[in-house]
Amino acid sequence: REPVPAPARFPEATEGLALPGAIPANVLADDAAALKRLGYSPEEIEDALAQELPLAGEAAARAHFAKWLSDKGDSGDVVPMAASWDLPVSDTANADGHDPLQWANLSRPDGWTKVSHYLALGCISAREMYSRSLDRKNHTGVVHRLLWREWHRLNAIHWGRRLFWLQGPGRIERPWTSEPSLVEAWKLGKTGVPYIDACMRELRQTGWLAYKGRKTAGHFLVFDLGVDWRVGAYHYEEVLLDYDVAMNYGNWVTVAKVDKPRSWGEAPEDTALDHTDLTWKLGAERANDPAGAYIRRWVPELKEVDDRFVHTPWEMSAEDMQRCGCVVGERYPQPITGALTLVTEALGDSHPGAVEAPGKVEAPAA
Image (cartoon, rainbow, N blue to C red):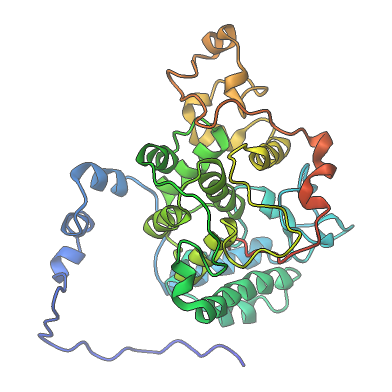
């Protein structure tokens, strides 16, 4: 059916209603006062108020989606991806002509509809997005994203509190750490791995991160630092504007590979922290963004680094570092993983994921 029309008016508020713990209206009307009441420091408040945030509310959500329909509802013919071996794409990604699922946006850091924060807060409904995009070329892509949102809700209902267990729904036992120095470096984007740092800094500053960034940064925390996946889930819960309990924890158990029991014959979990999979993921990022535009935007320490080294600054010689004004270990951290050798585009077809049986396609951030 069509979405239900918005009400013309709301019931009058009850006069003099005093609820336990309610924040006074005068405090809520002042962002700085509200943040102070919630326990944030003056420095955190100043930083928060300096950010550019999207307009809030139903009218803003509808205007945002209307603009997206106008700009991108019918556009987006196939955009070649230099590397897609680390992305859950279907055959339509490389088809001739229009790709109705618009897989190419998964390889870019700017997302697609970017309406997830409005969905999470109820400013626009999935039914309305379905209805308003029905006659557009990219309707199938919109529906695909919405279906995964609904799938995660059903998944959360099915597993209940097991979704939040360390062992996950799959009851996977694995050694974990919660080493504060590792966690803090990851949260602040100071791991010395440029793409990961760019992702975490964008997340911290804006409250949003594209699909690939969320999954790669999460995989890095779990399989390259060995940190308890729930630490990452807690952090995303704290900073994401589009936080949704079912999608957040559903995606994290999937990233951590604790979402289901491992089948006989599956490769054992990478618990040796040898960073093999990371070199594939970062290699794909380098192939898709060879000049490191995304990294330069969020990691200004690397702004003047030569294109050859922006993804791997540890490969610079002392002369290279002096020339660009970025000495690794001083202005920018040494990689917390140790030096990595990224996989090149030429080896993409030999990525293990390219020959595995197809699995479920995970839901991108909208």
